[in-house]
Length: 70
Image 1: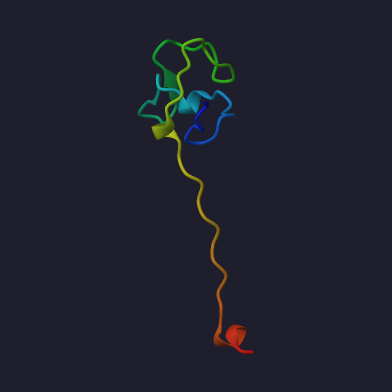
Image 2: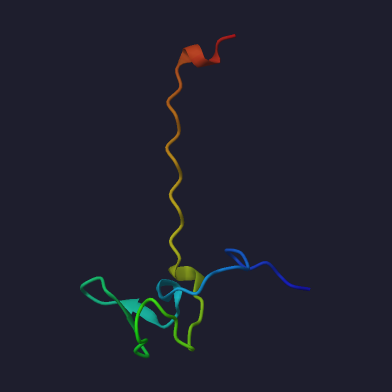
């Protein structure tokens, strides 16, 4: 039986989520193995779920007491 992965089974390969990528002091993404360009994915791509940043929740609307009156 297949198990559902942490963020779904259809995750597009991206260097920002790769185990072998890291950010340098300038904030630029670099690959340990020298990936040719950041638009393509090297053959050593390995997904790391801990590098994924969660989406922010939308702001809750402001309610007044009049909204809850019948």
